[in-house]
Length: 543
Image 1 (tube, rainbow, N blue to C red):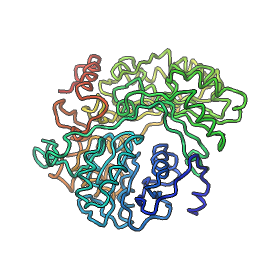
Image 2: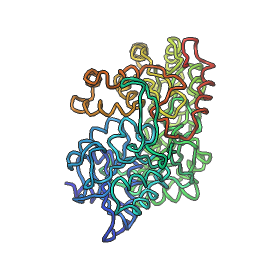
Image 3: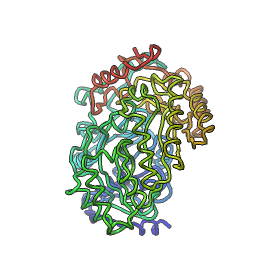
Image 4: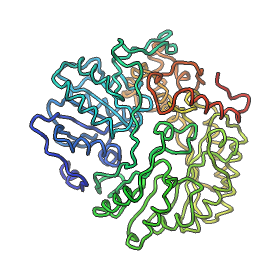
């Protein structure tokens, strides 16, 4: 079975033949193969490692793996989903590797991790990793391997101290966190001695050649898809959005020099193309790319787009997608309230949303999926009414178009202007209100689990003490009740659930990621928060 899965892969790069003394490395995705191989980030890191003669890399997934070395030197994880930490711990245990870095010794590999979850806030997982790569892999990954080669023969402590001085490499054990009291706020985060950098900065790749799939397979969650990263980050900078703030600045791939040659190469192995990015249609030359894809020789190509800015939904775009296998389009509107959209910096008018629906239908699409959010800081009951009214207007403007509203609860994210806000305790009730009102309009409403939002907030704002909680919970199950049970068992050893999830934190509070620099300084995030506060009701303030 395993060989059949890997044999189905069509590679668009040539793996190197490892040297006799190559570094033996396991690179894992803590979920099933079909999910992991659909991650463009995982593909890129694997192909980068596999292209080096000085590295012998073996892939490991939850359900299958390549032949693994008996004594690997490095063992890496790509982390894209918070609750996959359970699988990380399970995979380590299955290979008889201690799950906590402090328990590992000379015979154990260095455990490293990367990906959006760890780059945003690694602290709840910090005690499980020897080192964490913060930021984009294009520059960081090769720098890590080259630095490791210089200390390959040294003892574990020397290796970690040397690697900690490589920009973007975070060694949690070399930073001491102290607290006002065991269940209180953080008092300080400091390096263990002056030789260790006080701060670690996320590394940002600034080139205009972005990522494309090095492998295409029918076994992926999106079968036979060739993924092309059109843009990275987003110019809109919605104030809650991790995907925008964490990945700044906004970068675009060159259409003629990069995107078109990549697509042509991908079409030699598949007829399915996926255009990826947080805001694909805001590429300044997107119309040029669309004209290229509209040519008759691509009539049999199935085309999908990850995200579309609402005011860029033209009839031509809808027609092109409809002709190439897409049945519906997804847009993020967040709210039907003008005031709430000003709070979050969503530069969008209801008239533009209505135009998007009209153009989607005129172009031949069958449905329009909208993403909304409940519990946004500053939101009030009348803002929900505005969202219902917006959906009613869309149904009237584009009769026959299948409308769906997916809705999540606001969750605070590190390195964004709203990182100081907690989850709104009224959000669960507001989701039920929307469900009731939209049900009357016979509009498909798909709310994300409120309980999952609470768990997500805990992890997104967690500090190192949360790692002990996560160890307990993995034996209880991933329900909110399991987390409450674990908090009860650890009473007095860490703050309560509400501290992490629902409290609005003081603007001068030391945050768990205080020593980790994102793309924007904290002073800038506070300035953006101050701009949002102009539209807040009097009851919504942070100190």
